[in-house]
Image (cartoon, protein in one colour):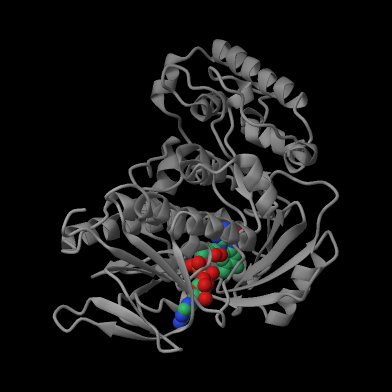
Length: 506
Ligand code: FAD
């Protein structure tokens, strides 16, 4: 091993972030000749985890694959269900309903994406054109409660979609804990009460536990959740508060009984001071109400949550508070914040676990040696900032484009200031049907298209490159694609039956 390589990584916190960091680090660093690096995780028996991160984005599959997890085993052990996207109800205006599905809107033609081809027909005034959602295989599947894994082979209606998972966050953390510990990660139970800094440079030398134990290390991952024990408590990294444009600051979560029909999607229903989530799992349904307590009381929020359940509540609602925003620097000296310690964006598009995965992935890519060259931290911070801001813009979009004026909350959202980057994107789409926030790490063009269209933005003029396509020929082509999707989906199994196959597998 090189003389300067990191010899010991200490992960502070054993929530989803801690164990999602420990698993790949143990896999890569604890094993193999010449690669010995200790990975130690400290979790407090007295300070619980937040445990409500249950919906994910499709890249979770690549994370699981990189660990070599078996899909069936993972689905069984975490009570997971498949997720094809999010159904939005009441967003934009009362009674509105649209779907943000994972994947493209049919195949590209001559380099022109499927959704742009549809847009051409729409803007040319063609009558009787079905909704763009009919070209999203994920959306068509979700609307019929059907699911199967994408077929291998050349592009077809059978693989024109992507998918993610819903899972029980506590079971997933436990699953990854077993994985990491089998590969050499060491778990220490204890509560950190003090942090020891090096005199020379202010780097963290060690943390001290309540029982007096001293745990030293070269690199410290702060996965301590909203407490941000090291990154804020010690390094004073600073916090950029985004509450003015994302005013929700509270949530209540409650599990309810499993629904008779297992939907392959998350549901987000806008309410008068926020929104309700519904996440179907095999053993129960996850529910929550995200809201702003300046526009409603906790008691009223609780009533709205419980009234909105479609199955029997299994517990009392659990109250949570948060401040939306991001840590100004996620990496300072030898401390890297991952998970809620690095910031929080409300779970409207299930992005927190994505930010954990990407944070860990970037750290692996930019792994320092014990010299901790500042350029590595600067690059890490630059990319985390770009990703946070891009996701922030996407989430603000959901609120800003509302035409609801039935409550003070929605009137605030319609009038609130938004970042220039988002204003530019909305104007560009409205004026010319273009989506450009691609050079920033965040959601893809079809995702932006789903939201912009779903919220009622119709471009005033189309991309002139689309004029290369003959309208009638394009209509015939798109109709063929639409029929292929409809026919293929009609032959897919019910999502619940498909999951049952996995659960029954030996
Ligand atoms: P935590 O779960 O809070 O874990 C913190 C850990 O630090 C614990 O183990 C604790 O014991 C330890 N700790 C703290 N202080 C000390 C100390 N002094 N000594 C020792 N240990 C200590 N994300 C999604 O991707 N999808 C979703 O659907 C989703 N829904 C959400 C809904 C809500 C309402 C909220 C608030 C969040 C949601 N998230 C979601 C975010 C997701 O829950 C978190 O990103 C994820 O759980 C990671 O949390 P964490 O591990 O950073 O923190």
